Length: 269
Ligand SMILES: NC(=O)C1=CN([C@@H]2O[C@H](COP(=O)(O)OP(=O)(O)OC[C@H]3O[C@@H](n4cnc5c(N)ncnc54)[C@H](OP(=O)(O)O)[C@@H]3O)[C@@H](O)[C@H]2O)C=CC1
Ligand SMILES: O=C(O)C1=N[C@H](C(=O)O)C[C@H](O)C1
Image (cartoon, rainbow, N blue to C red; front, side, top):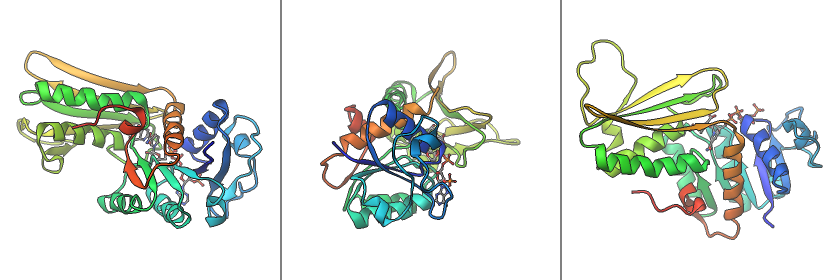
């Protein structure tokens, strides 16, 4: 049985991961919080609100990293990169769900994947990974005449925008249409902007309350429009996907793997 560790066990996703691991009887062998945190030593399940699981929280450090074979990281870009370096040093596999990465930060994940197996995905739900395929099909059929907009909504606490998922949907659509997302993306509009250039892919961001995560790919033509929408109603959905990825990574060779591979979906364009 793979031994699994959780970085950032005090985060929203960290707590969901501990809760789902308990529900699925997946034994966690380590869970960390920031070094120096007063939470060190508390029971990880108690912190997550699912009852004791008999696992004391550790400070994030090499000694803790040695306690699990696969580490799941839903923290933030900077701590994630420090944790990635620890996992490379200790030759541990990683499932990374962190979004809002710069190109340079993503390249560091790519480099690390030459030494350890890594799954990185901006969204670990089955539905969103299916949506990426549906959006490519819609783009192939409608994309040369329809206007394409990606709309996402998240809770007030989210730090990055657009969401990692919205960016992945935009990138998938752009790839299937042979467009370069950097050239065609439009992030928000204001003022006398003129008529919409057809080749652009627009992004709109909503932030409010406790919205877990909604994404729509809109294909708007003259006379009809198609909307493909996914709504997450629980963070446990993402946690289930991440733990599935952690179990899937067992005995994998170093490499950068996708959630499409974990879920056995066909390769995207
Ligand atoms: N791929 C997917 O399916 C999903 C991805 N995400 C992504 O996961 C990430 C986390 O989301 P969420 O759980 O809502 O965020 P939270 O803010 O709830 O959790 C962030 C975690 O990172 C830790 N952290 C933040 N800054 C530091 C730091 N400087 N040093 C050490 N630890 C730090 C926090 O520690 P502390 O508690 O001590 O502050 C906390 O444990 C985001 O990038 C989000 O977009 C979210 C859901 C699904
Ligand atoms: O921050 C979140 O909460 C989420 N982030 C991910 C993203 O940026 O796409 C995935 C999910 O929508 C929740």
